Amino acid sequence: MNIAAAARTYMNSKEMMLMKSLRRFAPALLLIVLLLPGRGDAAEDASARFDALAERYFARMEGREDARALRTVLEAEAAQTGAYELWRSLFREGVAPRQGASNALALLRSLVEEGDPARLENVSGFFLPSFVPKPLAAADAVYASAVHLLRMNDAGAAELAGMLFERLLDSSRGKFFFVSTAPEEYGEIVRELSARGVLPSFGRWPGGETAGRLPLAAPVRGRVLRERAVSEGMVFLNGAGQPAPNGMYAWDRKTGRVYDVVDHERRFLLFDD
Image (cartoon, rainbow, N blue to C red; front, side):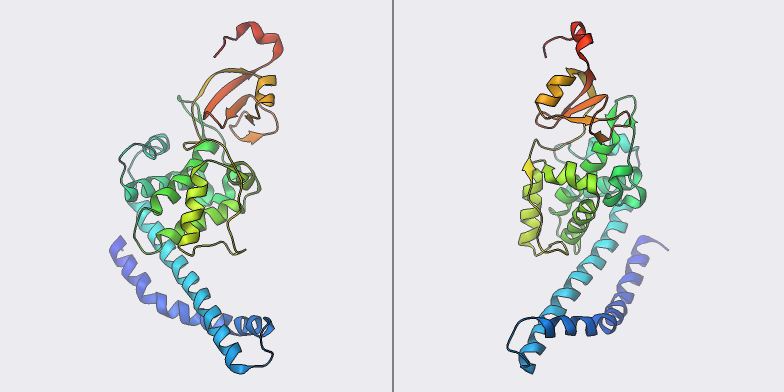
């Protein structure tokens, strides 16, 4: 079955899925409404609140179904090239939003199990010979996907961006290293998501400290003293390129550079950068 036929089949089954979900979740939604503060047992008020809550719930569910369908189509449209070239393509000037989203989603799936940002902490290794840390490139894929999706008008595009970030928040390391401290683009992304009514299940997007801009990943170049890396708050990367309490490499988020880490006894090897 080709992509167009698959999309038609999906759309024909969509209404049936929504009706099944309504039968399944309506009692729970009604119970929630009845427990909400209001005018006691006023039936009309409870009914109105139930209708509003159900409308929001099913609009969110329908948006997510559109998002999943759009993701399937976009991943099939990605450039047929390696992961490193996909990463390099994400931040080229003039890249079309649809192509940027396609390449970013394809990169995410190539680096992360099932393309799920919640599993970002399992990514390891480097692109060779460039020596770009794959964990940082995977985070770039999440961010670039959202940036490009929010420039598209397709049904489900904003919802897909929101789903990716909500899953990223489900990764403890992902949340700590890429949201609690985030590039400047994070604020722009969540403002746009909030303006479109795309919010996480817990109600609002978390804030965080801002440091640097995209791309997050960069090739390992140059050296830095361990004590300097600590004093300047750089993020250490272990031998697998993963953020860690200590490591062989240091990621300077403010400048976007990644260094080899050297100790005091090797000071004579250093040159002032």
